[in-house]
Image (cartoon, rainbow, N blue to C red; front, side, top):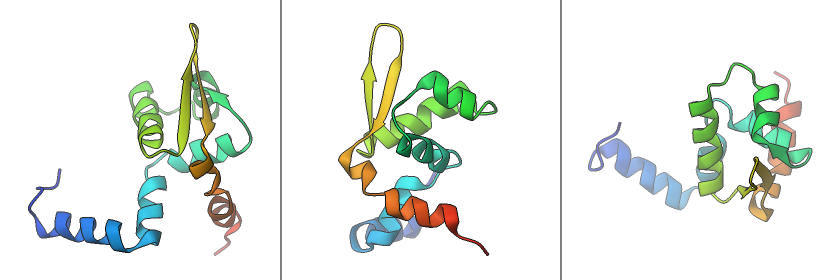
Length: 107
């Protein structure tokens, strides 16, 4: 965990407020976020859909990554009595071109 007054924390805050590319990368960084977002580009998904897609992800990590995407305004979570359904928000849909470019990048 980074100290709030450290130079690293200060630099990160400066980058987040002044560099849109850095801010975009901060939204999608995380071990599983790209996979979750790519799945949502195909349509709505339930929690169990994500577990089928990523069988090695722990429940704690999946919940954390989804909650971060919801908190960042990229994903909408709708709860029913039996499950939760996830979909991309308008803000999340704006990442489609970026994610598509990442998916087709060849080194």
